[in-house]
Figure 1: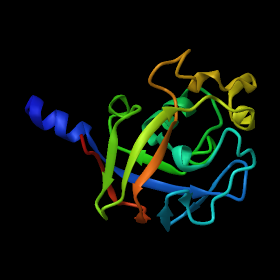
Figure 2 (figure 1 turned 120 degrees about the horizontal axis):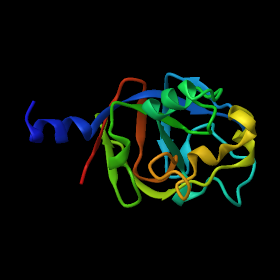
Figure 3 (figure 1 turned 180 degrees about the horizontal axis):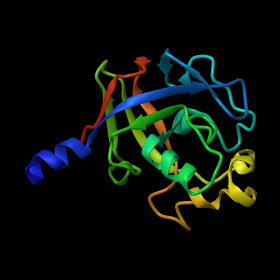
Length: 164
């Protein structure tokens, strides 16, 4: 595989899981959902001061990172870290604030920020220490927030790729 092909591959992935809840974690997996400016239809947040709203409409995380955390002895699985969309195959290093992602159904989102670990996810970490997913302490391991630029339907298996 050429460097150009490798770079292209690293910037494409799939929606592995879609997760929502009426507040708290773990979020429950669903097959498909409508996505609007405020996030997934039917998803709510318990603490709206730090979660939700247009700039934090979605929380995204990498399946590859989740699986690695599991091998480290943490009790994580998709949805336990509060992510709405779990992505497989996309190089997580290419997902950071300012990056636009587009799905095969035309949904466009823009990463707005790295998330800070929240106390609600502590139970899923060894020693109840969620700092393992802190961008400040472990760069490249944070979940990210995103805003919705173009809404629509998202479904498990949809292609998702870096647009810029």
